[in-house]
Every structure is written in C-alpha cells, then in structure tokens.
Image 1 (cartoon, rainbow, N blue to C red):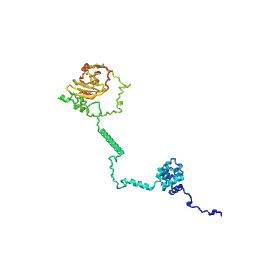
Image 2: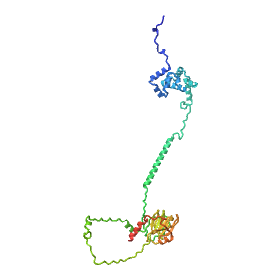
Image 3: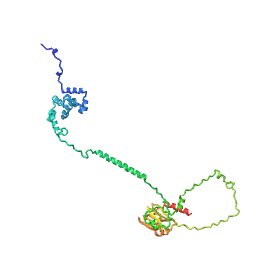
Image 4: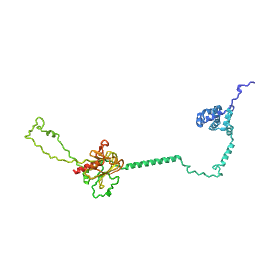
Length: 388
C-alpha cells in the first residue's frame, strides 16, 4: 500500500538544526542590542561580530584575534566563552594559532583553582600565616614635582610684588630739588672769621656765597605794592587840542630877540674798568675766594656759563678744576686757558692787569662767546640797586 502525504507528522522544535549563529542572535535579541550597540561596548567592529554569528573565519584579517573576539562576544551575551569558541571552531573549521592558546582556552576549573591556591600561599594579605611587615614610605614618597613648582612660582610672584611695592614707595618718598641758574646768596659779612673754619682746601663747599646783608635780602624779597591804575577820559585827548596851535587857525608867535645859548658845564666821567668773567667752555669746578680764605662763589660751571667778579673786590683769587677749559674774559677779550688739561689751577688773580700779563689772548673764533648772562647777575643787580 502506498503511503499518503497525509501520514507525515509535523516537525517539532528539536527537529531543526540550531547553529551557533542562531544562539548568538537570539541572546543579542533578548538583550535588545544591535550589532552597532555591541560594537560601541566591546570596541569590536560590527563586521567581525556578524562573521562570528555566521561562522565565517575568513572575514578576520588577523587570525590571532579570533579567539579573543569570540570569547569577548560570548561573555557579553552571558554564555560560556570556552564552549562558544569550541562550537565556532567546529562550525567554521577554524584552528587555534598555537597549542598554548588552545590549551589555555580549554583549561579546566580545577587547574585554575589550584593556581589560585598556590598564589595565596605567599601572599601576606590573603594568608594570615605569612609574616608581614609594612614597608615604610620614604621622605619624598608624597612629594609632588608639580607642587614644588607651584611653590617656587608663588614665591617668585610674592617676591616680585614685594620688590615692586618697595620701589614705588621709594619713588614716592624721594625728594628732588629743581635746578636753578641763580644760587641763593648767603651772608659773608662776618667779622673775625678765622681761616680755620673757612676750609679753603676742601673741593666742594656750599654754592652761591655772596656778600649780601640781611637788610638787602629783606628789600629784595619784600612784596611790592601794585600801582594804582590811571583813568583817562575818552574826551580828554580831543578836548585838549588847541585850535590856535594846530591847523589853519594856528597863530605864529614872533620872537622879539634871539635867545642866548645856555652854557652847560661838561664833566668828564672816568670810564669804569672792564668787567672780568670766569668762563668755562666745558664743565669745570671753580672757586672764587679772598686772600683771607673767605669763599665768595663755588660751583661747577656748565659749558657756556660764566661768573662775573664783583668790581668792588680787592685781590680776589681763582681755583679751578679741569683748568684747560676755563678762560678769563676781560671786557670783550678772552685770555687763557688758566691751566692745562684736567689739572687744577691755584691762586689765579682775577684782575685786568694780571689776566693780560699772565695769559695769552685767545682769538674770537677759537672759543664760543658767552650767550647767557652771568650766574650771579641777580646778586650784582641787587648790589647796584642798594649802592644807588
């Protein structure tokens, strides 16, 4: 009897062959993950994960990474990594790179436990019977190079701020005097002044000593009253015109007799002696003093400055440093220099006769003529006003 097609029984779940790929896809679907999600988590390319599910070992460029990829994927899905790797090798025909990797992949749990027990025998933390002595940390164990660098930077910053503040405070507290061309006059009219206190041999003394009394200083610095303004009427100049003196109506007066000339007595005034100036063509130190040691003037004359010797002095003397740049100007003629080079000239007489006899006349084009007034012009003017 022939069999009928209706005699065939329906196939059950066990009648179908289930591959490794079906198991992996099912577990991944249970977790609700896609191949891209597994790629982001395991850092394995999606094409390698698909090759593992398809059982295609030829998709891997490096065979040495196949075992690691398969085991990592199996652990991610919660499966036995060794069993999954064996099934993958059986279905795809993949062979391990070396026997050691295969043996490591098929190691028994007993051997792992034995190795764990062997490692704990000499571990002082896991085995209480092993004597343990804690190792003492060194001095530089907790020292950080970054911390040391930060400390040095902070010290440098604090030092810079401190130095800057000190410099600013020093500049604020500094007192400076404005230079003036005219030195203040001091009283030199002192009787019985011994030469011991005059110290004529000292190189630098108080500048600007001049023979001016207290009364003359008071008159000099006394405030002057303002002059009252003179009011002039607008019609004043016009009303002051006399029509008889100007214009066509002017009247000409005829003198009756000629006026005799007035005889004026003529007086002959002796010419004042020419002034004597100490003139410096380069910066030079000069001292003007009297034979008794009284110092009249002492200062460093800049280039082009001069000092005029008062005409009422008798026998003034000059002592000058850098004497090769110091000349005596008598009237409009220059004589000198009073010394040589940077040497010091001593006891040079400041009068017309000695200047002309002791020094050589200098041509006008050899030295520049003084363009500024004498440094003691104010004192000379005060003395002349008092004398008048």
